[in-house]
Each structure stands twice: as structure tokens, then as C-alpha cells.
Length: 334
Image (tube, rainbow, N blue to C red; front, side, top):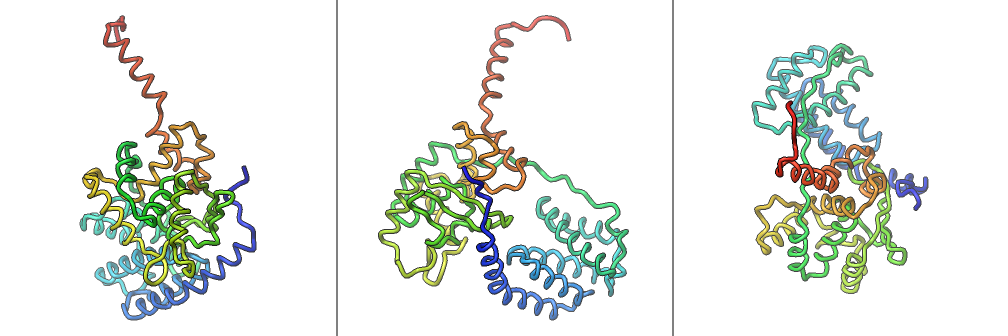
């Protein structure tokens, strides 16, 4: 099996050129917003956002940085800080407490903090603030949640409800390839290889890691049915009235099918289809290293979370040990 993370350099250059073209209007709008907000250090903030654009960051990454830094600088202005040079480590701690008082989730606070550290490192490199501000980083304990997979019976209920070819193809591609919803909604016909039953993801949505995923029998059949009635003039595989379908549409559509099957209170989301894909493949005996490549994880430790959901040997050992305990087979003193 070839390495699905490999992308020819010609594709990489095309992707970078496309990103520069499509992101430019977005970064201009963000810079204009900064100009209107009158934040302390606004000039350096604008320089930082342009720096991230030149480094080929995606719009979602730019948005997260903008929200985190603008919120922090607004908070600093309430502390009567007029220049970035006046910011000290205590201001960071006060801001973290401020976020916690607002009831933000720990994961959200950690993400904000990571974006702030990136901004502060930029300021240190520019000799704007002293490096001592990052001498001792603030570390918050991040909850280690188990991924929520959809139970096999519930998967069958959902698939049994979906009759519309477009929706069925969308859900089955998510379920059988493990792609992120944004990756599927960005697919064009050039990304699909029906003969070899492959989908080429030239740039991963979350980490820009390219990979190849494969189409199962049921996903391939659903895709072929959808292609027969799909408008051939459209650019995207799944399209709306204008261009590609948006995430909110996909979320609302999947939620409707959950309501129709009576599963709306089980905590399932469209992203649960990706978790289900990983859990089922591990249960079927796929190696963790292979699953890592299919999911597009840079670190195998992220993939390893799914092993906690699917370790059948641990379950079997537990019940074998409990059988000995329950029949009184344990002797001696502790």
C-alpha cells in the first residue's frame, strides 16, 4: 500500500496558490475589523494576521487566532493597558480566570491560550515584548474524552431511513472513509477515482495532511446512484443552490434523520460517523498504524483513543477474572 500522506509537489503548489487567492479577501476583512476596534497594539495584531496568511494558514485557523487575540487585547484594555509592552504574565492568568468565569469549556480556554502563545511568540521575535512572559507557561488539564461512536443497531436504523440518493451517498462516504465533514463537502469530481475506488484528499481539513481513502461496496454503490442524477455542470460532488453545501446544512440534515429514527437524545453528531468508522475498523482487526493514515492523524496517540473503545481482549480478561472471583477462587490475605 502506498503512503496516502504523499502528495506530488505539483499538487502542493496548486493548493498553496489556490489558498492564497481565496484567503486574501478574508484576511483583508479581518485586518479592517482590527483597524475599527482600536485595540492596544493593533498594528502588531494586523502584522501578525498578515504573517499567518503568508504562512498559508486556512480561514478557520485565521478566524480562531483573530477571536483569541482580539478578545485578549480587549480584556487588556479594560486593565488600562495601552501598549503591548505593558502586558505581563499576570495579565495572562487574569484573562484565563476571566474566561473560566464566563463559563467557557476547558477545551475552549486551552485553544484560546494556544493561539495567544503563538501571538506572543511572534511579538517576542519582533522584539515587541520580553521573552520572560513565556518563561513559565500556564498549563490547564485537558479532559480526555472517549470518542462517541454510533452503536451498530443505530447505524442500521439511520441508513434504513435515508432514501434520498444525495444524503445516502454523503452519510455512507463519511461512515466508510472516516473523512471529516468539511473534507467531504469540499470534494470535486477530480478527487474521485471510481475505477480504483479511491478518494484523494490533497489537503486535510484540520492539519493540511494529504491522504487517500477507499470506498467500500455500499459507499461505492450509493455514490454511483447519486452520480446518475447529479448535475454534471456543478463543480462540487455535493452542491447547493450556489456552490458547495455548507456544514450547517449537513448538520441539520443528519439531525433530522436522528429525529426520524428516535435517536436524537443519544448525543450522536455527524462527526460520530468518523468515530464509528475508526471503532469498527479496529474491531475488525485493522492495525493502529494503518488506521492512523486513513484518519489523517499526525500522531498515533490521537488514533490510540479509539483502542480504548474497542479493546475486546481487555473485556474478555475482565469477565474471565470475575468468573474466578465470583465462584470464590481467590484465597489468601492482602
